[in-house]
Amino acid sequence: MENFELFGNIEQGKNFLDSIKNGQFLFSFVISYTETCEIPGITFAGADKDSIQFTPPADAEYLHYGYCKTIDKIPMTPDGKPTPGLLTKTALESASIPHFTINAGSKIPPQLPFFDASMTYGKNILNQDAMTDSQISHAVDYGRIIGRSMASLTDCLVIGESIPGGTTTALAVLRALGYDAKVSSSIPNNPVELKNQIVSSALKRVDSDHPYSIVAKVGDPMIPFVAGMLSSASSVSNVMLAGGTQMAAVLAFASKIGFNPENTAIGTTTYITGDTSANFTSLVKEIADIPAIAVNPGLENSQYSGLKAFSQGFAKEGVGAGGSIISSMIKTGNDSSKFLTIAEKEYRRLFTSL
Image 1 (cartoon, rainbow, N blue to C red):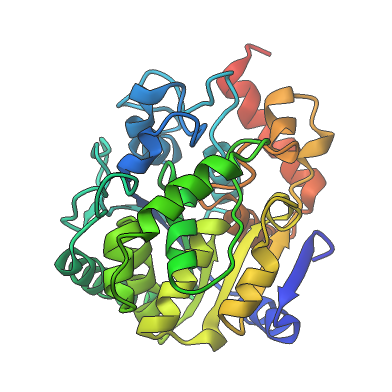
Image 2 (cartoon, helix red, strand yellow):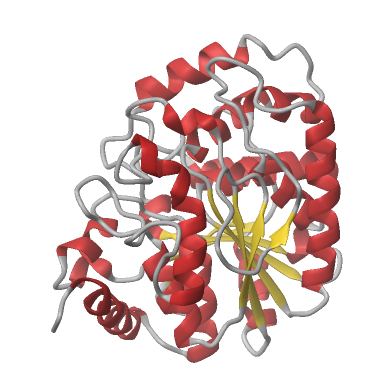
């Protein structure tokens, strides 16, 4: 536990960790898409503009097979840094944690068995409404169905996501719901000015304070779907939202539709909680009286620049990496040093012939 930091409701965080330390974990991976990610300079979640749409399904395939089917290589940044899915896969496999994929608005379906929420992808919020109110209702309803079913199978349902450009739509939703949010980025030099311009423009279309209408105008499909999952799952089991900025937006929307805060925590990396361009920990505290648990995976000590990059501000989080690592460490007793050893082994398998 020395690798964890607690924020927000610290006492509840200790209770949460205590309640799941001998339990079973189940990881649900929600893939989605917003055309907002196609705005130049907004994300590094793909090698180039045309490949970004393949990142969510490719992340899902990599977690399942160890390689991708929709693209030739695992998702990488333009300069070759790997998806945070590498950390998630290492965590899940080292602890034998089962996982499944949910397609909640991905532009491209993954080539593997998955739950299909029958949702379309979100539009570019700079130019038009992301979705309709009825699409939000659909997302919440389907999220509730899957969330309750999955939570009944486990002691802790861990929910991760992959949605390129999701920090921008999350920022818009948080601002529209009245929070003075500053969000993280997949890029070390967070394009704050660009995000603020997009969000300011999008918020001009918000003409209602109803949460469904707000997310329809400026959000993305992942937010209402995962909020629906949380609302039902937290009534029957512990739930860990695995992620940073996007999960703060999920939490904000979920606080409007209802969830059980006593069974809920956010799990992320210290790269998110330590991001000075964002205000993640104070934001979570403002939204809900729940704990945020942060893990330091120790990647700054890696011999590989591709892994060390996470500790230097690239990606920071994603594919549920933080929550997966926390779950893995709880189940196995591994510390960050042991985790790094296993992650480096997976890195070598992917990138070298050593």
